[in-house]
Image (cartoon, rainbow, N blue to C red):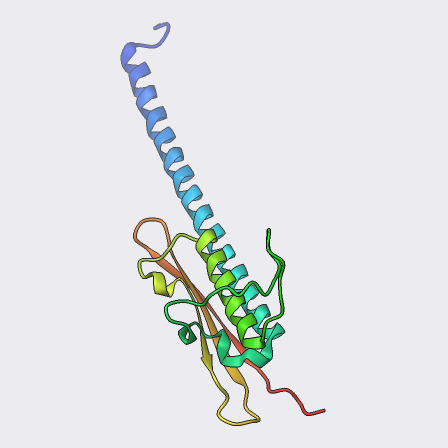
Length: 165
């Protein structure tokens, strides 16, 4: 009867253990990558919803919410108070531009920039074809995912015309 383990048996056991640990490490890395992608996607969805709420709160601005209205980019007008600066009165269009500028800054802070910076955060406006037809907004946010993968989130918003009093 043989007592104890031979050196070959110990080495085989270590190789099997090492292969198992490498598999677990690979799963851990993939889980972290997927978690990071999910976090970025969730942040993009929340930022798109934030811009939709800003548009709903200022329906009179209409086309002023479109990023294509501003070259090269919308400017801040300090309509809302922020750290160290009190807010002041603005027109509907100035408020829309200010909110658009602040929103784009928030997108830039929250998400890695995409390969095309102009595509990072944009709002497209399509006016209703008639007085009784709704305006349409398309909100798109793009970012650079892990590796060279570019991701995008988009949402549409339909604003019905105000009813006369």
